[in-house]
Length: 213
Image (tube, rainbow, N blue to C red):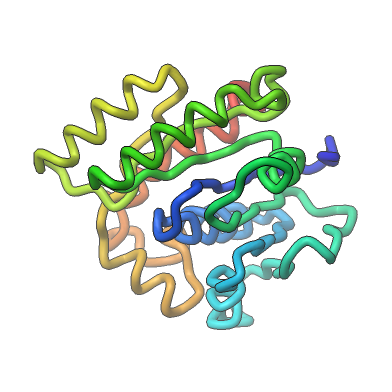
């Protein structure tokens, strides 16, 4: 069950390589940077979020790393960010949805990813937890490049899903640099990351609104 005193945010997609870790780590670093207590829960076998934490300097705001399902998040944590594995369905999907009140689904700009996302989104929308509005879902276009045909195809596809489509996250070197150093874009130079922050901001706004709960 979700602890009502803690914001619990799940980054989820059935397909691997959709950029879940990029969103999860940048959310964790943002909330940590504004003084919140944050736990980053890595449920993926590759443990990419945990690797990001290992690269993080001890001089930066602390983030609690949790591997897998076994360890519980302690009391006093303000935000729990969950990096989910790919391929979840049935009871496994229900298990992770039960952990979160807000769900972000990133989708890449490729025909294969859009086809996979279409079926996945249909299943998520029918899930009892979503139907009962216990988990609110929203979409994000990930690794987008403005003014390309495939980006506009993805934009049209996500707009047609009749659930919140928040923003596009750019295909930016800043996310790669951040991944290497255990940083998020809100912890890097403001001038260098200004555009990336502008694109990411709608995710923060949605999570801070009642629409996401």
